[in-house]
Image (cartoon, rainbow, N blue to C red):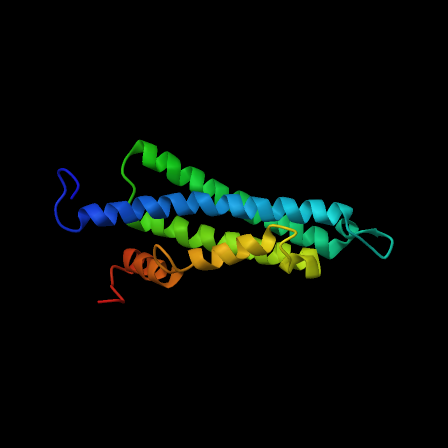
Length: 160
């Protein structure tokens, strides 16, 4: 047991800390996928020019960048809240749920930019995508986090 803690508060606080770490950790995977996709788009040629010159590819990259930036800002805000005082489990659930979903969406989009190379181990994208698939389920599935947030928003528990 943790000193000065009784009941489930100790284990649940550890779970909240783990989820806080996940909200940050998945951003590294997302950034790696984005950087890989950008570099690939600059160097992979199709129809005599880099695929990064095509509007669809640039649109995908722009949205991946916007989504990553938004997720980073959420994690940063959560970190600042944590420095100012204790975080609520719902705040951490929001960040874990949203940032994991964002990271996996970025990995999936990067995979489309890399085409068939997106599923090879020559590039890190599929490895990150597979790891992120597992992160969707551990430390609470996104469905559980959605229920926790729904409870916080409505005051009504959907799971009791």
